[in-house]
Length: 84
Image 1 (tube, one colour):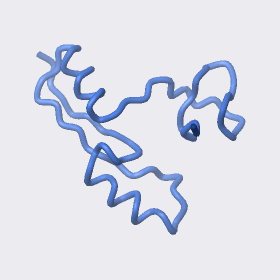
Image 2 (cartoon, one colour; image 1 turned 45 degrees about the vertical axis):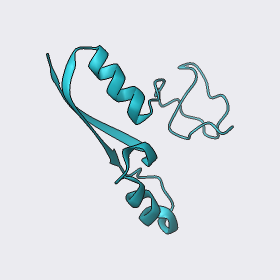
Image 3 (tube, one colour; image 1 turned 60 degrees about the horizontal axis):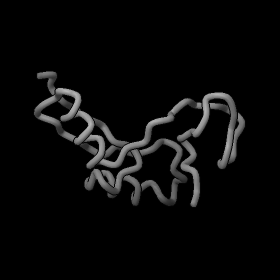
C-alpha cells in the first residue's frame, strides 16, 4: 500500500512516505468510522462533509472537488456535531 502524504505512523520520524517533516496526523478515519466514533463519544446530529486537499496537483483539482460531494471519496473529512 501507499502511506497518504498527510498521515504519520509515528510522532518521532517519517516512515513509509516521502518528506522530512512530521505533521502529526496519527488518526485517520473513513466517513463511516468518524460518524461511529463521534456517536459513541456522545455526539448527536452528526454531519460529515468532504473538503478538497490543498496539495492536489492542478490537473486533478477538479476530480478532488468532485470527490468532496461524496464524503466517503473525499481526501479530507469535516464533521459537525452536537454534544449530548
